[in-house]
Length: 81
Image (cartoon, rainbow, N blue to C red):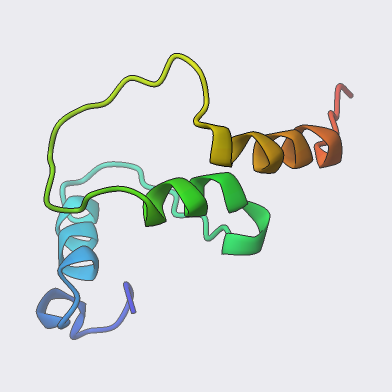
């Protein structure tokens, strides 16, 4: 969608905003991460009030995120080469 000639008139405001940012002459790398590979972020996004624009600092993860974060940590592999 982002590389389509009609991306700047796409019905999705997210697509239009991303295209606008990419046209600023910045070096931009877009990486698609599927929801199943980022379950904690997906769960947090689903519980966020989209009408609120306040910044919320979380000093500890909410209880519903802890199992997902534990899974992420246990399945993460470090490549120190």
